[in-house]
Length: 437
Image: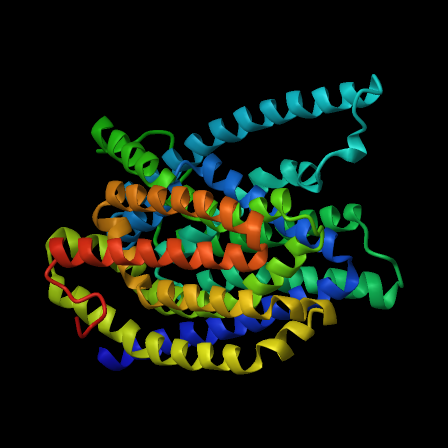
């Protein structure tokens, strides 16, 4: 059993490193294809539709992992009812979002038609907004795969497949057909990517439902009272701000640089910094993803010894590798930055500070995993505190010190959040989040 657990973690670790290499290759590749300012704006657009996707899902992607992982093996009736309830809920949010977007686009075209404001003068993320429902559906289906405890496959879908498709599309367009990449091409590539991924996910989902004899086409709910629906909705809505605020923290630093920094290329430089430092985030994310579907039932049964075992397994792999990676970034930071372009080397010191911040957050990643399922309200409160702290400090420090100021603000906010989560988990649960203390 222990051997199998370590095999699962090592598999996810290898996939995590592979996904990082693929994403790094994609970002290096695209940074040489398009100008730095367009590269930064494209990154903002992608993060924008991802955050909007989380709003449309209303937390059902996380609640799917929580509930469906409990039902899927031995309760096909509860599984089918939960999936249909989930689909009906997000169908309503999709329709509402589509109507709002139609009104918004109509207003922008009216301003363009009246020569008040040209449509071409809008920020690039405006052109990507209509992709949000596809992004949301893609995320939901990936969580369904994870609920079936197919960790490696879910990780591949979540972290790797999009970059692979985009690299293929951009490579053929630029290298085979010699076409200069423009904004319209990026929108088209994202559209094709979402469609292809969703088709693949639907095929996998059909196989999962068939294997577990889950029929989501039943017309009547059997033996399911209304209280379960209310509980599912309540938990989903409670989880929405948790993941939303977490992702807003990862988005506002880019947005603040876009607004405050006088250099238009600064966002592109910062995206390169994030891409490099993200290896310190990918490792714990991949290593701890194996026990995410197990946390809810273990916490409910108060099997803290088993939870400690999962944490120890993750920490024994995560911490030593993260230390080695941090040392590698410190030694070769200039060389790695030069892969994105010679001008990116000016961001060396901010990169080192940002990497230190990510290392601190990575070391306590298990805390965040546990706290999300144990007490989502506390998680939300701590994330709100981190968001406010980041906004206040980064507005001041970025204005005076540019990218250096932003990286210091991120270090301060992540360190504060990590400390708060550690002390809360230590106080409430009989476990050692860092294995030794």
